[in-house]
Image 1 (tube, rainbow, N blue to C red):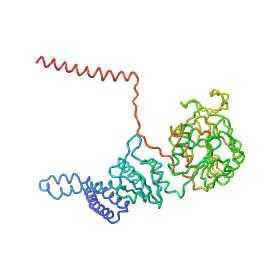
Image 2 (image 1 turned 30 degrees about the vertical axis):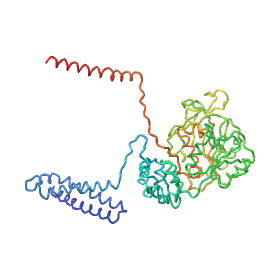
Image 3 (image 1 turned 30 degrees about the horizontal axis):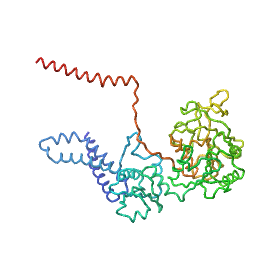
Length: 512
């Protein structure tokens, strides 16, 4: 026992030495966080062992009259304060935060955290807010989250009224804006939201702006159309991320422009001419990137065009009797997507009004490879009876799951990889274009999925959809029996009980 006491006494001495060494490293070499944290942790452990093992001895000894106010009591107090000080020192430099809100309102999304963890250059964020701005505190809380996640991010606040020259330098034309700057490139975030700041952060890392062409002239979805069947919401979302969107009348231009990083054909209703298809084929042969959203019951000529790579489009419709939205609107639940980079960690439901199947014939593939990423559930059906009442016939129709979205690539090694692999021709084919329209994209995860498809094709793997966090509204739904119980307890039992108790007390007092 005496030997143990001597050993633990040494812990007290070495603990003090480790604590002083950690303080020295922190003072002289403040950037070596791991070293001084390790020293202070060792000091904390050893002082704690000493304090616990000698607690009773110190307590008994310090309670004696001769030492009650002596050096030993002082030493015990000093040791206890030293332990608390070291613990506070460590925690102050290694903050631990927990977001207990239902919507995660006070934390960053996993996508933003991944981008911040992979930053290679320093990023400076400059907020232009005056002292009275109601958005200043919101911006401060958000920017603090970014700096906590990555040491490469820093931020400052500037009062536009006090530094007009800086406002002019960054081209800020309004109050309450944040400028994201890295390696001489700067981008103004449109809003004080995580979505806007992260998008601006990624845009500063691009060497050039990317241009997407949307083919028109065959009844395709119009990116300027704000009605339910238009694509204006998709256009707004992509432009917020710094992409340039243009329309292309291929019939008159005869070829795809050289600056096209991606071509989108969404919902054509009339056939493409031979010359247009040849222009598309030439573009794909030059390692082009194409997104095709082809609705059923439309003769577009792509049925023959895609067959040369083994893609088969039939005039059929997927029926999903259990979707809850209608038999002709198949849905995909979170976690039910085939494995692919576009749907990895994608935890949102999507639905697709009037969708056709997309299949692959390996015999006609000519070396191309097909990877599905959209697939209906096991309780769905595929029917070729597309006219009249859409109903399931188990004898006639084919049972699911049915593939209706996939990736075609001419390089088998690139079917499900990112931009590190040498780029080849890539096509994404989906048997529906409604899922990205204004009337549908706002619901569930449809707009997010469309955005992920575009980002993946454009080699913007980090630029995934970051949904704004919404404060959930909790609704208490009561049945008739529960409502009756609450009414009886609150309106009858409690008031009558209190009244009865009052009457009993009054009667008792009256008899006294």
